[in-house]
Length: 330
Length: 77
Image (cartoon, rainbow over all chains, first blue to last red; front, side, top):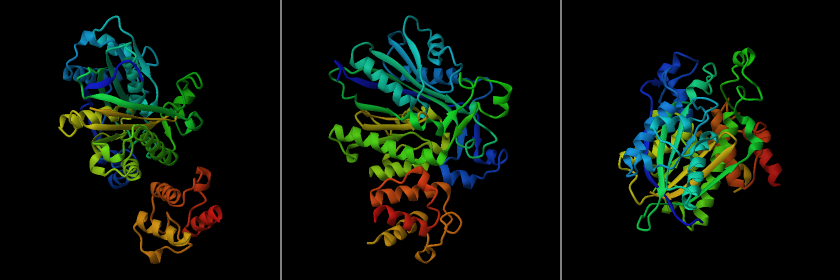
């Protein structure tokens, strides 16, 4: 417990214009609309153009979040970006966004935690706010996974889409009802090989061979991930509720990572939360990795589903393996 | 309820098949038309029902109704 409380001031999101439907995918790989719908719940996803990179998407979401808050650009004192598909290995996408926003003399860095990235970044931001080191933090989750997708692998290429989501996290005033109640992040590196982009780093630097072998794209053992996803998101959500003397009945909205509708349904079932209290937009965007949670929250706020004072449970799971949850009063 | 009856109930609920189809030699994927995620969901339902953990490497051994019942009997017996 720090000296202050943190709160979500506002959210923003952005998805590229181009839409790829299941029918479009039927023409690209051996798959079908029915197969994709029954196994994933996905119907269409947004795809970045050749010119659009992560920072372009994140910048739009960041501007939307800042404009929706009462915070001025110059009051932002830290930028944290969660991404595994940033513009470059370095410099960080956070630094590129800092430049685009015209902000000077503040720190900016990226967080790599796969699809759990936004939860990780918010957990870090919360520590900065609670101990008084920062007052207003821009946190973004952005992913352009379609640029590192193996378009020959029909099991994975149908799953991903591109998008960004962002929030401004601020120090809560004593009069605020909004605050981050609790958060918890976890990892189990021993299972990392189930979900990996093998080449391009120092283990397997880029070469003609790595490109020919498709090792710069997402490799995933979906079945193993499925079970881990449900169990770990349930475990961390359950622990957050328990240690705050809350039950599933106290939650107004669960905002889970949108990786697969059946993971979401299995999680809701295990948590004993009715599915109408779960924010789901996977049919429109597919899995946008670290962007799914802020994108889903932003849409739900703008649709007036999520309102000030609602109790939110954010939970996610991803490469690492990593997972984590946030309990907040919006 | 014994293990066999519980397994049958779970298979009926998860896969939406008739009780008559759930014979020991029925293969979840080939005969009961489960997809790959259904098989994972079945294993998770067994874990919840019987309060045990089925490791990933054991999951591949549970291909038929009979194999699932025998496996669970072995673990719980």
